[in-house]
Length: 210
Image: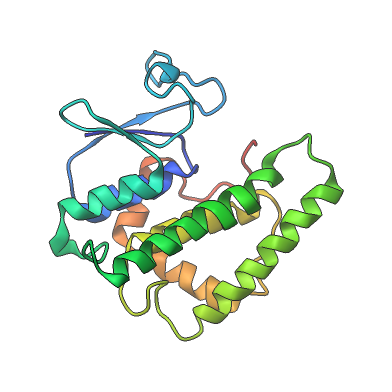
């Protein structure tokens, strides 16, 4: 398999899960702004929309959208228990959380804060949305070791990656002690460290261009 990624972006989710799964893959770095593939080539010839992640399977099939890709990966290694089995209510709950982080936290929260053309008054709206959602998650994590309860899953990689962006947009996580403790637990996982080291994210950069 071949993973197309941009350091620190949402593709870090797939990068982490691939390490959690222990599956062989090649990581191919993309310049998120120019869409140039490391070593040469136009990433838009891989994914015309130009965004990451994309996972090319050994048979040439191309998968996009991180929440779909990580479920595919989890299903390749069911013994790792990275996701509940299909056709169970727990799998539906996992999909609900994955969609929550993709829509409410990523696109509906953090993404607008990276755009320089958006006025501060508008960004305040998105910061307030994030604050409400982090408060909800902080309460949830008061009684749960992981997002799905006591069992680690691909959802935890998703929240870890999204919450990483807080310091890039000056969003203070200190009011959420349970989130901070949770992030420390996830950051200590070998797969997380391996993926972050591979992307040059240890130590974590203090800023990132939008």
